[in-house]
Length: 216
Length: 216
DNA sequence: CTATGTAGATAGCAGAGGCTATGCAACCAG
DNA sequence: CTGGTTGCATAGCCTCTGCTATCTACATAG
Image 1 (spheres, rainbow over the protein chains, first blue to last red):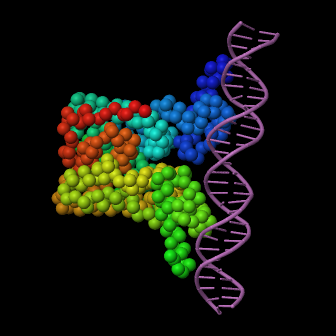
Image 2 (tube, helix red, strand yellow):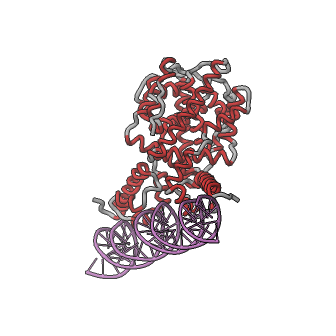
Image 3 (cartoon, chains in turn orange, red, cyan, blue):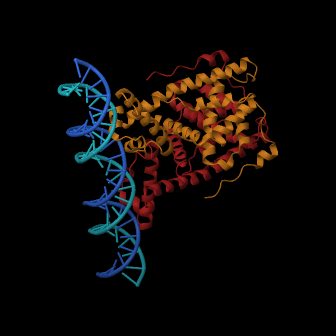
């Protein structure tokens, strides 16, 4: 397969990181052993320690090469529709209400990492940089929308980006816990609140569509 | 101390659950061993297994008796001020920007539990019930405000409660990761966005107050 | 073709953590 | 007073995990 040693090493590194991302997202970082990762990558734990030195080292390497953050996915969703309302609905659908399996895993991994960051300064430092980049990117997007008159300047782009990121994260948490309690109209309306859009489902409906949680 | 066996047992149970709550919140559930909990409670692991059968059993028992959820804390904050703007600011300050150590621990535990719920149906079931109660409580609060004319009926109470809970959770995550990037004015303005309040800091200021993340 | 460096396999250690089996003192019924 | 029960302690088993030390096969240089 890989011919030179360099190629072989690079290939192994990719396999290991890819397997780690997959398994960490699916089962949680602590629940996945180094041996699990190695086996999934078709290698042994010796390869992991040769490449990264420790499990933590592997995690940090993974973070460094990790591009598919929440905001990246949001941005991708935004490209798919033209009107603002449609874009919000696309985000609501593809990130929160009907995400693909891969997206679900990504979001879960992002949550676990941000929780870990609260107790692990190394993880926090890496995540902080990514978060700042993501925020800036989204703020520029809102600024452009305002400049183009696509949305009303209800607040400055920085605040909008902060609110929007927080909302998506928070809504995702709620929906994952109790999907039956939140349909796509509610989610879309919630996102629209940020931009002063009137997307609420009819009042009568909205007061009654929420179901009590499914009893155990 | 405790005289009858019943009293003794009840006392031990409380000690164990209290110690577990404290330690789980501070270090994370997986990082805390059964022995740690027992020792902090002045007992041994034998007591834990007599009471709860397993570590998971202890966690579920803890959840069942757990009253101090995020929304409970928010509700408490709301009582402290009179005007809506002041209440939002109180929430921003006491939950997100300058929370007490105890509040910080509580919020962290709540995040860990909700993440765990994504992979553990037992935890999910318990949390789901609490979340529904919390949501209903907050929705009733917003409904009362609308009925009393305290806030404009910009959306139905259910949507408002959904948005507000999501926003607080999301903002807390962001602020914990990078406190320097989000001051209290931004947070308050973000919360106000939900209710169409104009609390934004001056535009010129808001475009510049965000700092780049502290390098490493 | 040989010498050497290197990617990664193999085997195993040390420690920890969940859990169990058993022991024992305090309590309680008769 | 006594025998049984209860609440918890003690000791230890067993598995798993992160990690290391050592070895092997291959690739590259000369």
